Each structure stands twice: as C-alpha cells, then as structure tokens.
Length: 160
Image (tube, rainbow, N blue to C red):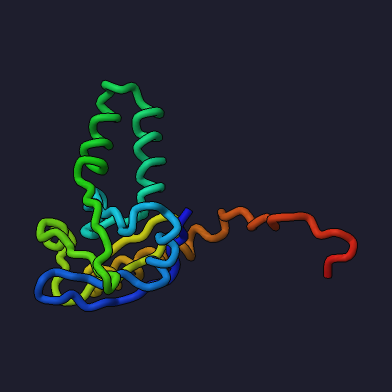
C-alpha cells in the first residue's frame, strides 16, 4: 500500500502537466498501474488522489457497505468513482491534469501536493494555506482527544 507523506509545491506547464513528487511515485511503483487516480473533492475545492489499490478497496467498500441499489451507494459511487480519472505517468513522472479538475480546484500555475497517508490532496497553494491554518487550529483543539500511538511490537528483554 502506498504511503503519501509531506507537502510539495510543483509548477504546472502550459499543457497542464504536473510533476508528481518523486517520493509519491516511488510508493506507487510497486502497485501495478503506473500513475495516480484523482477525483474532485465533494467537501473542498481540491482534488483527492491515491493509487489504484486504494481505489479498488474504496470501490469494494462503497459497494459492500451499502445495498447495491441504495441511495448512499449511488451517491458515493457517482461522487467518487464516476468522477475519477486514471492518470498515467509520462517518462518524466508527470501527469496531465484534466481541465475540469483544474477548474474545480482553482489550480493555475502551481499546485501543492498534500500527503495524507494512504491518500493525498492537490490544492491551489493559497487556498491550501487558508485550509491548513484552519486544520491546525482544529488539531490543537482536538489533540487532547487522541489516543496514544501503540508500539508495533512489545520489546523483548534484550531490546533497548
């Protein structure tokens, strides 16, 4: 499973090509599809992105958690799956952003990749700064409610 970390601003060329951060591409390289999947956020003016294996799990969850013909299934499938674009890497590690997605996110000459673990977002840089400030304020308020991170294993007597 790909893990997307860090925040990186990249320039978009006149053809709408955007270089995907090398650390993101390295994580995706183990997945089968050599590219990313993007879809417009229905909560924010940004794009959500991930690798193909995550999208397969998301699709299975949408169709498994809700009845096949339920309103919830149809709403999420339409909002996420139908709106998704599979964007293959070119030889330089770039993808071409669809014009409608760029317009949705207000992206022009630059875009910021925001790693969120198993997914990432792409924002117009100024819009992301406003969003980030709000998220930092919320995180400070909610930090007291977080559970401590458990160690991945119990140390043996010989561990130091």
